[in-house]
Length: 476
Image (cartoon, rainbow, N blue to C red):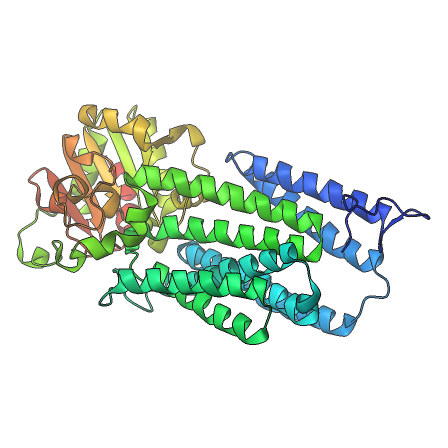
């Protein structure tokens, strides 16, 4: 697709190359929609409108494409593919549970990267031998990054779905193998640009797909949210590069926005984890994480109580902090926790929510979950803001969180989460843990806070437990 920014300028009759000027102006409007949508997604109060604006812009762009190219080839195949996408995608997005949202994000992200790589492969097969070196370089970049994003996202999906182990998957010499495959992919990429050939492209595809798997395999469960963000950035960059290959400015704008925002988010999340991104991706090779405090918890004594006892602890406190985690999402207990907090507020008790940057399975997971229950945003406090308040808190209630409050992040160098800043719940006077069992968190390591004398365990499904606590508080 020729752009209004192409050297040819505006042709006679109001057409730029084979694209009408009106269509180019619509693309400019859509690009503005994408920018404003991203701006809207930066805050919880404007996120819904930002999401709708972005979706509307994408719809306008697709519809405009058909009117701008009335003689489009393979129209039945295009419409058929779109129909299949709608039939599969719409029900999946509507029916997905909050707990499975990270898996859906990973899957959709992988499909986007794979689609960008596939488009570049088709373009290469169509005119790759005659393209300029610049276009060939963009094609090669899209193939590599898109393929890495595709296979990496699929493996991330399997980890999140727990179809495979959530712990780092280590193979002998894995770090060296990853480096070797990466170097080989770079060699074949340069070779393909210098001497275009289909067999080189096939080898490059295989190497890139393998590289995606090797990059994600050693990533442990606690670091999966960062990898989701990184792979999202990869997909954006591959889409932007495919836009250059196709001569489509709108794809370049959209892909660059996704790539830039994903890169910044990845950087911020790695900072929140307290270690560089390279350590997140390759740190498993430097420590025997499988042996980091994973056993013996079920044989050690813990203090447990019933809902009525927990209600008394909460009802006579002056200040309470709620720490939500993935277990809250699994139980779909966000409405019950909101009801409990409202009851405590009515009794004059100060209550806040402590939000860790990587709580849950994707960035912002807890924020979205609590927003479903209309929890006031003012009650949500980020880690840096809430940590100094734990020492003056009477009761901390941890609902389904584990790794983000695990002191092993500070005390155990062999732990996969070592170096990650945590919520300092141990500084509070009393800690209440809501868990189904003593099973470790997603990182697969034991939490010593569970055995602290100040900690009280409330075992069971979080939704049922909170419902009973709410009933007990009402009866006080």
